[in-house]
Length: 101
Image: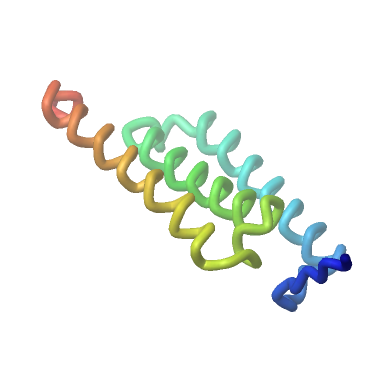
């Protein structure tokens, strides 16, 4: 008995794309380190670092974990619980007054 597996044909990125993504991740990391040492940005340090970290997370998950090229169902199964977790964390922060001055 022979089983045939049918895979959805989709183009995976080339080595050049992976190198470009790695270079962008390196630049974002350098910006994060630079932002940390700038005294003028201390009041907005945490939001800046969170945005930069979220960008890096998105790129790593999308390209290196191939989520960008897989079925949309996998994306929903990954992003859905992530959104719920962030919403629960934000609710807890608001409940305990983390954002109050």
